[in-house]
Length: 166
Image 1 (cartoon, one colour):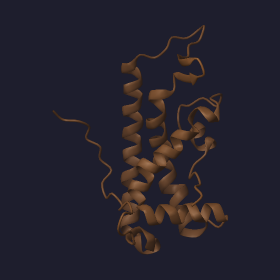
Image 2 (cartoon, rainbow, N blue to C red):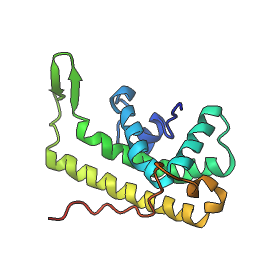
Image 3 (cartoon, helix red, strand yellow):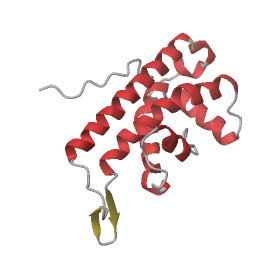
Image 4 (tube, helix red, strand yellow):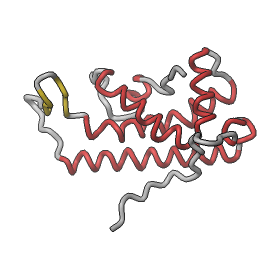
């Protein structure tokens, strides 16, 4: 099945602190990763694939358009940033892996990047909780939400990531 991205460059640049000068090819793969790891996990395979099929066919309308624009996109934007931030300072090229730097700026420390990731994760969890609540209260609008079986990803009904506890 062909795959469609549920959000694009405009969403991330507009609703996060990412600069508009960042090349799309530096972060767009993290949107795909966030879709697979997070969006599919909260929507379930059947609803996720139904939305993608509607996007590809050009007929994402009505309740499904509202679901994507008002509920999925805000969460996915911030999950994409959670996935992107650890790699933002690096370039992988033919001669190796390079850490980017600027003449008139300091690179962020690992602790600072971790702090930004946690802030993005908190925001993503907030929007994901709202998405799950919306789906729970309106699941009759999206029959695919409850139709998963066999090796499909079943929708996760909780957005909390508690981290590691030792």
